[in-house]
Amino acid sequence: MADREESSPAIEAHGSDEGPPSKRQRGFIARQRKATRNEASLGMIVNILRRIEGKIDDSKPHESNPTEHRSIATALRPFNPRSPANSSEVLGVPSFLRHETIDSPAAPTDPNPAISFSAHQVLFWPAIQSALPESVKLMCQMQGATYSTRLEASRPKLPHAACVDISSDWLSKLSIATLKQLSDVYFTTFNLANPILDQKTYFQRTLGVAIDGNFGICIESCIVLVVMALGSMGQKALQEAGFAGTPASSPYVGQDADMPGLDFFNEARKRFGFLMCEQDLQACQFYLLSGLFYAEALRPIDWWAMLSKASACSAYFWNNLSRDRDEWMLDMQSRLFWITSMFEAVLSQELNLPPSNSLHLEEHIALPKFISAQDIASFGSFRYPGDDPFFHYHFLSQLAHRLILTRARNSLFHFNPTADYPPEPVEDELIRQLEQWRERLPPMLQFDPKSPLTQAESPSDALVTAWLHARYFVARYHIGRPLLHRALERPASLTEGHLRKCRDAISAVLAWASVIQVTDTMRSCNPLKFFVCSQIFGQICVIYALSVSPYPYIRDIVSDVNKKWTNFALNYLEAGAFSSPAIEQDFKIAKILCEDIGKI
Image 1 (cartoon, rainbow, N blue to C red):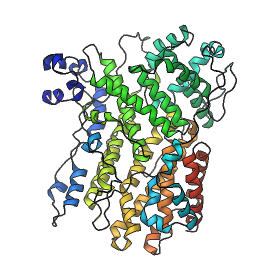
Image 2 (cartoon, one colour; image 1 turned 90 degrees about the vertical axis):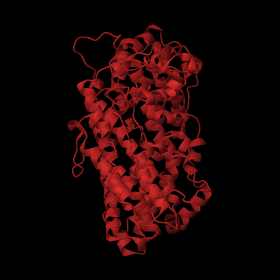
Image 3 (cartoon, helix red, strand yellow; image 1 turned 45 degrees about the vertical axis):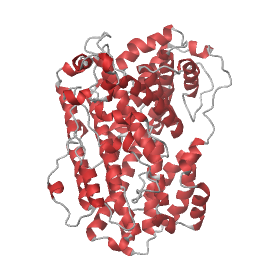
Image 4 (cartoon, one colour; image 1 turned 60 degrees about the vertical axis):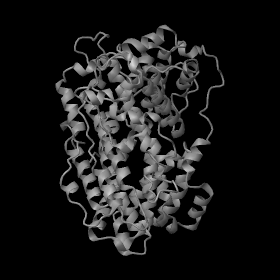
């Protein structure tokens, strides 16, 4: 392990003048810390990703097919994840997640062009293009294959108030009760699934600094103001689901009903202009919080811009570790790194956006253990809601799921018109990994896929539990997507087993939709709305093409799709179309396609 640690970029960045390896290693204080019982449980979640090479690896194909061997090797390469119980152990990730191995799927020299993982690019599958109505084909020709990225990049900037007076009298009139109430709402909504802030540090240090300074130019003011903005959004979400009563009172006017919290956010942006060169922990937190606001506003390009800046802050920290970094700081930076990494993966895989240069750090950064700040006094046995291990387990569970999904993206989404699709053992193995992930979740997160969540009885149901179920079903769909591609491109090559797997993939789509409706009860607190819309659009394209196939056995794959599903899909897209030009274009296309799906 010492050799591995010495080769990590976080250590090498110090150079030879930093001292012998033993001194460098002493900078990692947390490595000498004994794992607690809860931390050992956290390790179990990630250990489900350990690859067991054996049966499939030993069963070599009879025919020598380099492409097939490469696909199997990619899917069955060991993850080699390490337990987060001790921060000297780091999470190993597949090499295809590293920046230096990411190639453009559209490269003309690629002999095996990839089946794009992007949901928007499903529309441009050759078999789907040939099945489209002429009106939709014309839209595709006019807009181009990257219309979603182009439309989002060319939209007007987020509106700002006419007054640019940085003193902003209305902020000084906010009561302490209002500030605390909106802060509480943020921590009971957004921070549950994405723990960007440490709740104890925020309430006992950050909030006080901002108030004492009358919201002057400091990073604490910026963080509190974005928290107020997200708290306003979270409050709207709680009201949507019937979980909240009277909203927080506020003396200021100009609150935008469609984008609550915008005034708070604009005040934060004014102040941060003087702090834009900051690279520390709080700057990284500010970028991630701002990214959530843009995500809620359905502005994915702006969100990506914030993630890129957060990624730079994180990379700066891990490449310049010093001996005075305490255990809590390392753990918080780990949290921020993995939150950034997960969101970056979602954005770069859906839109035509480049990943950051920090991806190569993923195999060197320990998983967070959610350590409490030791230099801030605790009030007896009081625990903040976010300290519940339930949310810690969920965070690591979604990280494990993201790694499985990224592996599926790399090993399955490959297509050559003259060659075979990825061999079935690869698909079967990925399904096995996914089932292992689900079965080994901690008891508090366990669920039966045959009885997914259908109703949210608390905010955590809609914001945490439901998303765990949704991730499971969407992964089953993604693993089945290459077979659906095959059903459209080469229907005569399908066996009964293939058809059964295709039907399973469509069943996963229907189950996913029912769970997404649970998350939609708090629509104003869903940073992934754009990507839910994207998935729905891609699913509509696939289901449409299957439903108009000239082959009855292909049409039978979508026989369970009914009017209820198309209504849900169109309603979800229509709601997003008001805030996103890309989704607006998707909705126009989806309406036309769903007319034929409705004839199934």
